[in-house]
Image 1 (cartoon, one colour):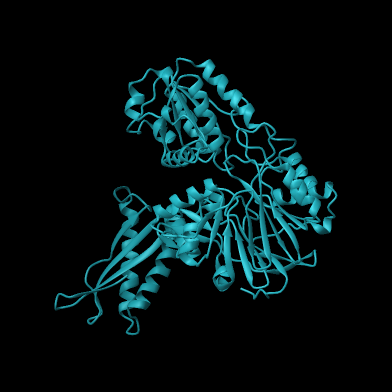
Image 2 (tube, one colour):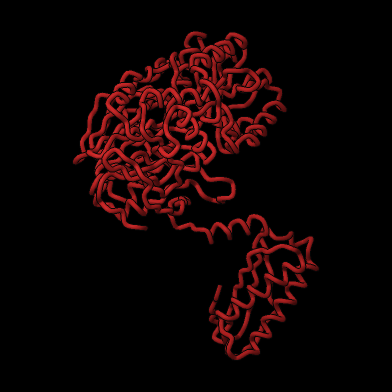
Length: 566
């Protein structure tokens, strides 16, 4: 990476641009760095075997001695999910998070056996100072408790990041602090870094209270039915309302899904959710009348291993569907998940249950992100000189920049950036700095960053064309092929139904090996390379497919010792 000179104030974006997820960026003043958020994104279908995708940490590794703290805006995975991996790679002196996020982070670190003693809680009244950088916070409304925006002031100017937010005048939780936002605007904000997720939606988003009304109506409509409600485990205010509605309708609650259990446990202990006496075990729920219980579960996005998916498949060990069950999707489809959700709904319908979705019955879900008019309101409150749209793909960022222009921000003062880009803030003026593009980091089980493009390409080939193993028994000293090469495959063809094809491949392998053995210059490495390259082209001519060719060469010696080359 290019060197970042320790002069003035800089904003370095590591993740969250051109994508929805893995939010992470840094503010650097002279020789001190504050990191804001450390999120993950979840892999697309082509990233076979990958569990999480992380931002590139190279800049932080190269400037580790300058890092002073990590600040967290709220507790969603795309803002805190990367913390365990970050701590395994880089020393972070202190982490500051709102209370709910702090508890979620603690659970994550405990699950991975990571001890970290410098995790602190901040509130809206907190003020932090790191050298010449002053930090303060303001409360926002989102789908998870304790969401905050952050203002950072240096001698060069003030930058404000909203985190994820919406404006809800009748929220379930506390109101956003519009007064403090306006105060910041009055003092002067040089650059606003603002959430772009829902900028493509016109108008204002629905209030969470309207969702409450719709869910309450469902309880009234189905008094004798068992209700199965699927929602995001992290949507704590939605879960809070479900608890309160169950309390009003004398229903007990049974929870399925580990993430749901963890979030509810933390929320009850933190005082965000009341009525813990409503919770019952699966055994207790199965003995109750249908109208006396509601099941709250994960799987609203059609995740194959989530509770709702196993319930729809009939493979859940503790709960079986009943014909009079009512399933409610209190969520909307994340882009890319519509097909998976549709499959789950079809399976549920085939078993005779009634299914209600946000589309079928309006107001069963509302987003925690600001629509276009709410983004305009944030700009009007903070009155920034410059705007950097954040947290969204390119079309979202571009649209958000145009929204800023409509609100009076000059076009040249809007920045639609990419991950790795930087901005320089000097004496309240901002210019685009150097770019430090980096590659995504893939997490595969316990391996961080070990899986690269070559491995993923091999996995794609194996997934589409399979693998073909050529087992060769030779006596390298005598330069003899002892038996005809043996061909075995996985994911290429069904052996019992393609004997003629496999015989052709064996004959060709036999020809290649004998030819190589007749060449005194050929060794194990040459044989492996030639078998691979020649077999790839031959198999492609026969089948039009390119499986991975894996030669296994066994050197059988007179002493009955065998040397293997793979």
